Length: 487
Image (cartoon, rainbow, N blue to C red; front, side):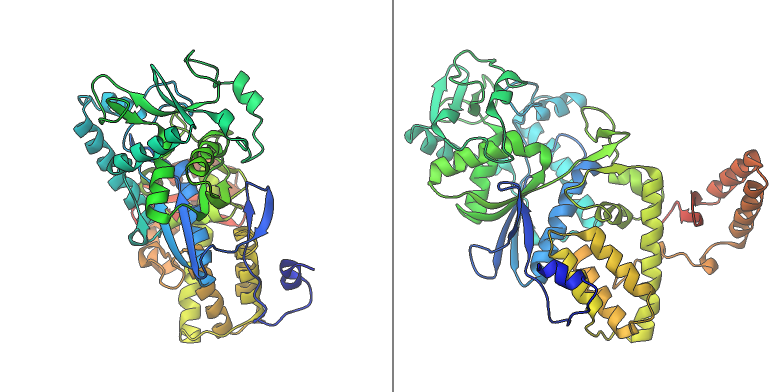
């Protein structure tokens, strides 16, 4: 019987029976016991954004996922070294070698001259916003390295030169390319069928390419870029992660995370070039989160169905309501966004914060071990099963079986793993009846009366009056939920 089954079985277990950490490795497709390369140290690399515009909440799901992983590793006793790269030049629209450069697209959108200085300035502008968003989601950005790709040009050029010397790279009139036929394991991540790539979107655009799935390592440019043995130009997008992860974390790292869309091409390219250069395993555990969907489609700037964290907060929600919303689903499960679902997450988080204040007073902030804490830890260490962990949290908080000290101990573990500020709730997000103005409470009661009478026109009119008073109403099965629009 597995540790997970033992802890979650009907028979209660001792709080000391804490399971080891298991993670789903995309490379094997299986759940594996996590063992770091260096005892007590976990090396974690997360693919970061291309900073040609603001990030959207679909992007942010990846970083809440990697932060939850880092928190779980830290709670398990590991010292976590984290890197999130910042792409500030030269990322094409597609994963192949065609399409418009994203940074150039961003400059044109903002009517800026296309220069290297402006490219860096544009990236820094949006990088500041990105890091601010991470901090608002309770991600400790001070513990993360955010290397800019443009600061590692020398390392990228040296990496490409190594691949060329070893016979893995070849030159064409259109740049330097990686010869995928030289790497026998190409496409192993996620079981990619390379013949599908050959006949699909990565058809040959450059007749000098030896194989359709070969990818660019250096792209020449007549006006912009850096000088290299191959002339003026830019490193290919894929090479930056390999060069920066090796520079900052070493040739072998423990875990590499990213969205599931990166696995088929970008991450397989990273594996091919990194292992060809070093002759060693590049990453021991690959982990990918599923998409966030909006109206049934993947949230994407190219589709135009994106929403920013600022859109969430200006609607009156605390940023951590979005984090709670993400954690309600397993990271490998596609998640559909809606205003109703976000309102439900905000309401649930608000109730947790209220309970935290109550239990803090009852327990005098002294904690005790319990079987519930063991079950919570078992869930989080079973491939970050956050929905099950949240279920344990709610079940235990509602139960009279546990003392205030045991419940406070559960809050301590939940706070460490989930990052929801459960030990120190933000006061402005806590609404008690006394916090709501009497006039707003009266309007809400009148609206409920109108709804029960079937007078929905009057209910809508009252909803607008409540909105003018600074509150939004979300109707749920257990009754209406009020959220202030200015937190």
